[in-house]
Image 1 (cartoon, one colour):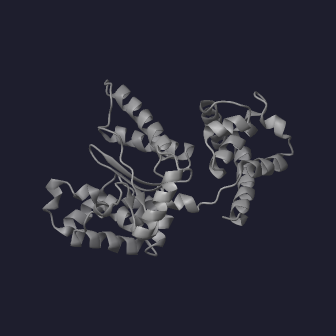
Image 2 (cartoon, one colour):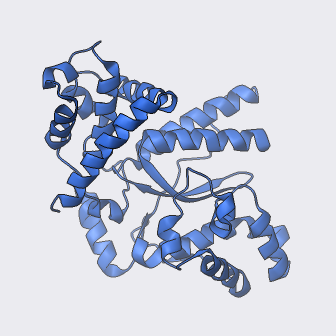
Length: 305
């Protein structure tokens, strides 16, 4: 893997984050593996990872004239109690680059310098506001220590004390949290798809019923519901409807397809992708989208759990 592979990795990761409405809090990638600290808004971790891994594997194989699997085995996902372990996990993730054998013998100052200079992680943006990247949400973790200078001290302290791996405390193979969190998470997971491992914070994220989202969109644009369901008519609006339904309603792309004209989930995916591309090129479309999103966010804030 060279720098071109790494830059492509980040570009495809950004696209997948946007497509599946996944929040990235931290990342690091090494020579033969990577770690992502993410928050799924729609309990779609498996869908997100499958999409990203397939795209990157395809590109990597094409560039290096190879075929077959790029990764050894399925990825591992853990459900993290954000209130008690998110900060600790972020530090552990960022320190991965100095856990390799050849660096363990160095003093803490040399290891700290290596962490600070390591290009292929989200750490630079946590230390320096000028080095933030748009696909990382730094706010939640930094709010736990007040500011970047405190996070710097927290990570440096981890190097000095050689803090232990927090994942040694994992329970039930996939859950990192206290007993109360584990009990609540197990109840939720039993109700969720066995293919997913959503974070507990997702349970607390308010969503809107699809009818509410459609109602706001219909009022905003002054159109009838039948127009949204008619194929080949105003794809821009249908794309926006699909994008906002996916972002604000707890339904799948297949379910969205039934609501907007009985199309399959692949068609919904492409409809959303075309709309996002259109939004990048047109300030008018961006303005309409933002205006509509403000109304939806207001409805979310006023919704009862």
